[in-house]
Image 1 (cartoon, rainbow, N blue to C red):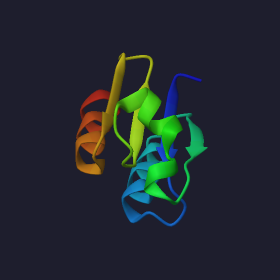
Image 2: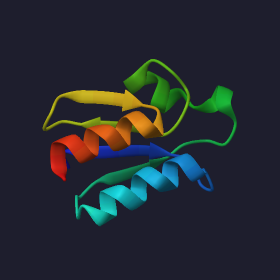
Image 3: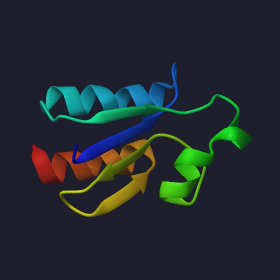
Image 4: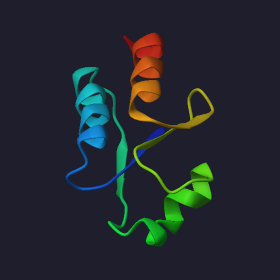
Amino acid sequence: MTRTLYQLDGCPFCEKVADRLDELELDYETVWVEALHSDRNEVKEVSGQRGVPVLVDDDYGVTMAESDRILEFLNRSYA
């Protein structure tokens, strides 16, 4: 898989990104993170921070957080 989305169940910002990935018909793997912020070690290892969503796109060699920033990247790169 070339794209991985780290997200939290029920997170509206994560859902916006997942919806856009689906609209663009892009394949991606979902990694569900822990609800407790301090337990999000997996996302911290890849992004250096514990917030979600985080998108890792191996095709472009990017790892990014912040839903608006991710949406801009998806629109610029895949729309």
